[in-house]
Length: 349
Image (cartoon, rainbow, N blue to C red):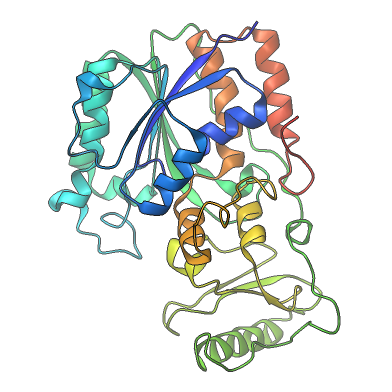
């Protein structure tokens, strides 16, 4: 019998770990969650944690419930190439310390931290975080993982840090799995609605049209037929920041998801929110965001900031095995269930 796992999270966002436990059918309790974002708080209220906070800087940790698995992914703008890159010199770059404060006080058996790989450019700060975990008795493993290596055709790279108190067996990062084709995540528009180029209009003026036109022309010049192979273009940004990928989705960012600016050549239109959710690993209809009073742009922002569900699904079985929460046989069953997951065809039992 799998042991019940108490879950807690900081900078919770969509709280990907909670959804992963739900899909895997693992017994768990959401004991604590914290996020300052209004839309995230509406999601977290839907998930019903026993303790809910809105600011990691203003809470009494000794009054928070203890947990078995604490997950967190502090805001990345301070480290991201596309952000301000102020690193740990500003308050935003120091927020992860508040999550470590909780960990030092309650000592959950397991930790799952996600961050952009650029945090390694702030080596002193990363080493400080790792040292605090080590002093608290954690065996720490870290590795940069791609969402495209775990069943999602999205080129999203993130650093994952795993911490375990008194591991029973060695933690091993899961091996890569085959990636399904991008079109299995996308709903192609009928011929009457299919567009070769975005229409010029209020959704970005000529910016989107110009970006898509330029990148599709470049594909043709490179010998890529954008109507036989899927090309995803970040159409809503400036020309200098606009980029494309063939047969893969570019990294879904908060900004581009908010403005629904990802153009798909084989769809004949922009990716909608269900499609962006699938490309982040969430099954269709997983969250009734509109019923919760969350606007489309707010939901897009949450998707862009979320941990990819497929990656977390594949991390949880070896994490639970290493911490002694599941047997070897249970681990194999969970790992196989995670490997077979596809967000368009699978959902919780």
